[in-house]
Length: 135
Length: 135
DNA sequence: CGTATTCCTTACGTCAACGTAAAGTTCCCC
DNA sequence: GGGGAACTTTACGTTGACGTAAGGAATACG
Image (cartoon, each protein chain N blue to C red):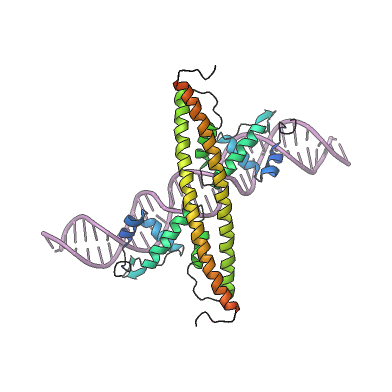
């Protein structure tokens, strides 16, 4: 357990997650991360690493950092006030619906693009046989 | 057929697709669209509309306008030179792979988020029963 | 005929998400 | 104790995708 609970320097974080120091400091400034300090040096906890994983995932889906920040609240609420919890719950449900819509559209676009590729593949095959496309 | 072949003004386009004039002019400047001109006014064809649909779709998946421009080439190649066709074909295959990866990640994230939401829903239900979350 | 609407071009402004450069600590090593 | 490695802060720069304002032309309306 000593391993997962290890505190990491900014450089270790960068190497592990493929980001720059600037990015980590930027996320801290935006209150997405909150590393500990030893003197003035940052030390990233297990919690920071879990959050960073979620941040990077969120980014791949086109969420803005601000949206991600709101989602992180959800992952972080054990026993808060009911009102705030319910509000974040609603936000998360909307995001989920968004993501499902996006997935559906993505699947449609994949099918679409695959079909186009198939046709181009045929054209290329014909050309390889020496046929002229203009015939 | 007079309907689908209708030429549309910039305002009709904006109303139909929910974009601003600036956006359409911007896409033209980036060579994503190529509307006809009547005097100096733009008239958008059926082809422009089809392309705009693809542009907007692409954007929802996080493709840059430049990437979208390259994809649009594919949708537009009937019989081009083999070299160029093959190159675009390769690009399209990479994009397709990207999209499939994105879909897979999206599905994982959806499952993830759905689970979190489920847990929060339980917490809310407990609270509604009057139980204290701290108990 | 005036003016109102809709279009146009040109060009500077903006916002997110960092990059990058400058200048200052802290700690380690020989 | 001089240097260099790894960290820090502050602050201006960059890129993509437009927004927005300024000023001009064409058509339509009362």
